Length: 445
Image (cartoon, rainbow, N blue to C red; front, side):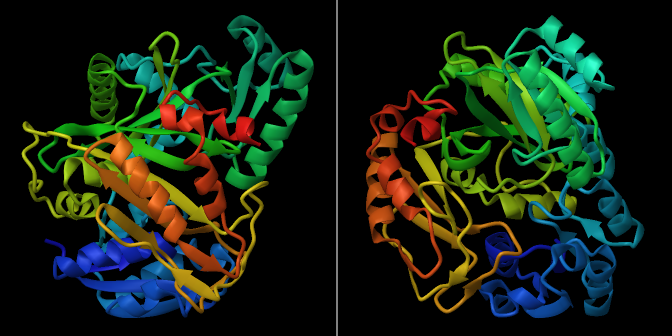
């Protein structure tokens, strides 16, 4: 097993990785910006290194500073968490070229799946269903118009190098496409340094379902069930649950088999997620993208399968067998995760500030992965995620009951937060029925 680990991230995911690593007896090094010096993850690491000012480009995305911290502290491995450098193939290569262990998929897999068009084509060749769309970037507006006419409106205009729900727009006709194409292309060039755009079919009523995969050290790829991720605002997830209320045993078997094929197609190792769109009326699903990293919502899979995904990541990176029998994976129960963000519960606009009160819910089947505590300052420099509230139960109804109690008990004063939104969602008939789709939040607003 890896003996020393540098966590190249911050907040709740850094704290969550640190918890597992220390349980395994691994010495942990945290890196942090000036803005994060007082956050819990810094204090909980065995050693902490300041790597730069608040601007993430000068700290958490500063590869030279992170590698220098690894060298000065004698770190053996780097875990990137999610976001920041987690899907940066060049950084992964540099880490390994420096003689360090990269806790994640290899750089070739990151590269192969990082471009949405290339990923779509790879998946189609592997027999994974893909939505109707372009097989090459739409080189210009005229090419986009031609492609959309062949696909049929409405269409989704997407940044080929995008992710996390960013760089996307919907066009219901040619006039809208002309506007969205220029907007997405400009955004993609600014945010990702790559203005490539793809056009694909847009499904107005669709569910977002993903499959957790794990590429093992022996070369096998296994699927650890699906997660429902359809409660979203601005194409970004707010709630995830496993198993999905929309997935039958027959559909689950097809989804998981397709996800395994996707992983095998790129020789995948370590944790990853195959995201799909599911048409609830036909039962058809289509490949959306693969996230070559640990997902924010991984805890719901951990509950249902009774495993620690971070531990499994570390075991794969160490060349060790998993803690579970890959041939006897048996899910049990139901889990729901809610992303507690520093944003107002109506318009979901960021609301940083000093946390005056922070009281986490407790009880059977309740887990909180938090990045902050009372007295901390939520700054405007990073993602608004404060914590993840995860609940589990023997059934979905039991998990929902525990979710209601946990949300009612979660007390946060200071920064704006979306806890009231979850209280509202948990009384919403559409959500409670399980028959919801990605439009549920807009219908609530």
